[in-house]
Amino acid sequence: MGKKGLTILGVSVGVIAVLAVGAYILFQTMVNNPKNNYLMAELDDVEGTFELFEERFESELDWYEYAEENAIESTLGITAETNEPSFQEMGIDQMINNSNIDLTIGQDMANEVSTMGLNADIAGLSISDVNAYITGEKAGLTLPFIEEYMVVNEADAATFLNTLDPATFTGEEEIDYSMFFETSALTETQREYFIDEYSTFIRENLPDDAFESGSEEITVGDNTVNADKLTMTLTEEQIHTFLKDLFNKMAEDEELANIIETQMMAANLGNPEAPSAENAATEFNNSLKEAAENIEDVGFPEVLTSVVWTDGDDNIIQRDFDTSITVDGSTGQVAVDGVTEITEDSTVFNYDMAFSDETMESVIGYTADLNELNQVMKM
Image 1 (cartoon, one colour):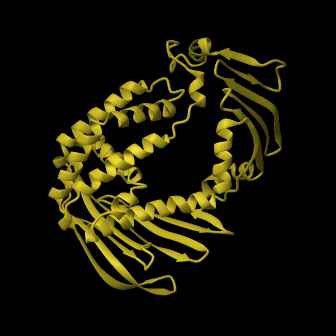
Image 2: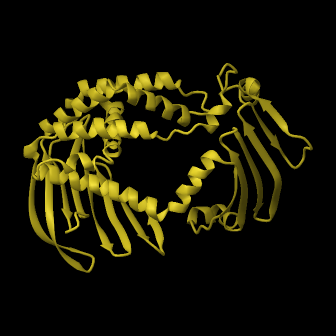
Image 3: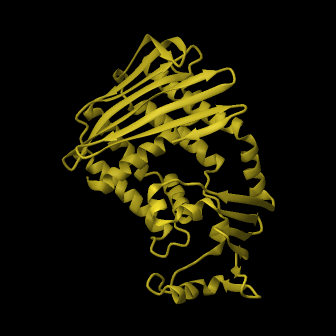
């Protein structure tokens, strides 16, 4: 299957995790059994996390929505502090520690106008009156040592870039300034489509006998909880079958292809070496078909086990996920475990994600402390 297939594997599993958000109502109507209880707990957890972020960052989200429809201006100050030994050896630590950058950014998305002003002090070197703008038709820049804007019309952009860097730009690129003002966010209709389409797929294609439930007393922080223990265990054959069906479904999904095109257009803006959005979407779909055909080349020598513990309010308060993946003869271990401490006015996530194989071991710790007065995330 190779690295390309493995990338598709990771991307697709991530996509499905996101697409399942909001399917809670669908599962509420089902029979109370281990499979449905597990799926409802997972979906509740994702939905609850999104609601928590929306509540905690309500002002920021309101500002983002306002900025989509109205002209705004914001100021951003940037400073940094480092004690990295390698920077000290090169003598650049003081330059970083004694620098500040101020950005003034204006945008009018509806009328396709964006401006930026920069003033900086880098270790005593002052930089001021650097201004730039872009519209749907042209872009401009002014520097302290020139009196007028340098303007590049959209029609001349490819030629201008070729003049600056002929090794990278041919001058034949199609550059659309309006893409700068396009949003790549899913529409409400698209979200509803994926909720219906893929939540049903997950429910119908995960085997009932892969789930079991029980109860267990666990300790979370300073509290002892009588928790419901919900377990999903998938064999290698079940994983192969599920992923093969998933990849084939996604490859034939025209709505997904349209979204991939939109995302690729946003991601590749200004990259002359990137394929067109249509070609990128086609390549993605072909890769999905290839992944489905060759999924058995990826081994899962140990079963995939995912265990969640829920409290009396159906919140996931502890998680333990383990599996192993073999690609091209090399086997790696993947593990995710952690707890969520929930109180009346606070939710604290504390998770570790571990990846290891014959040559390396990496652990990423994630902590998010979200409450009314304190909003901190660390990785």
